[in-house]
Length: 84
Image (cartoon, rainbow, N blue to C red; front, side, top):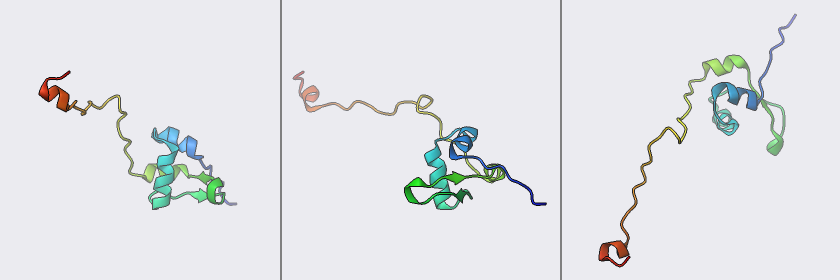
């Protein structure tokens, strides 16, 4: 008999990898993540084998809350001249 393989939806796979489903779609379209396409065009539904998730070399980015703010307020002309 043939073995039946359980496939994951994009949402399930994204939850396991702790990333957004759109990230997985980008990886699939680049060819880095093998998946089955069950739909056409805008209504594409991808299914991913759990074994392919373990083969994927993927580390999610840290959330913005963990990163330090790099924005520095630049002086405006009024502040430079002293007309505030």
